[in-house]
Image 1 (tube, rainbow, N blue to C red):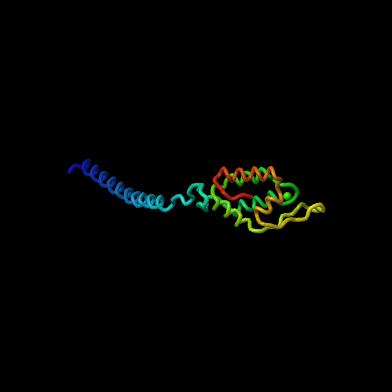
Image 2: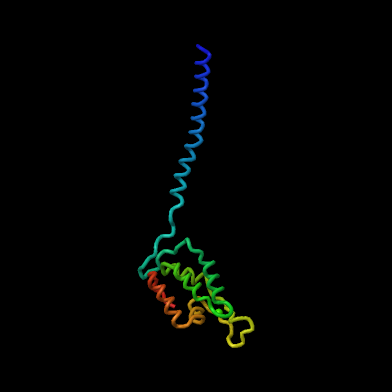
Length: 153
Ligand SMILES: [Ca+2]
């Protein structure tokens, strides 16, 4: 055998081994990727417009949203636009119920040294009725209705 041919064969063999090794390395990774796809899924689901509970949107962090609502209520005045922004995220009665549960019962300060109004303690709907005027409440209920939620405040 000629030396050149020998070297060529060795080179080809090395390349083959390298390709085989690379394939071995790549192939299990590929199947792992497939597993990941089936595992992830979309647990959220859509808005249920029926009268029932519907599915909770697991993409929403209700604890954080409840805290943001509390911040909007707490102290002097009320951040009505923030409240509307949060309510627009709700897509089912289950979403609304989850938010209400996350809020629980909290005491909202009327404002530091506010002698004209005492603090208010209550659940989410009671606090909304306390903090918002009738126009703002109507607007919020409108948002709920148009998002397929049968609960009203
Ligand atoms: Ca307030």
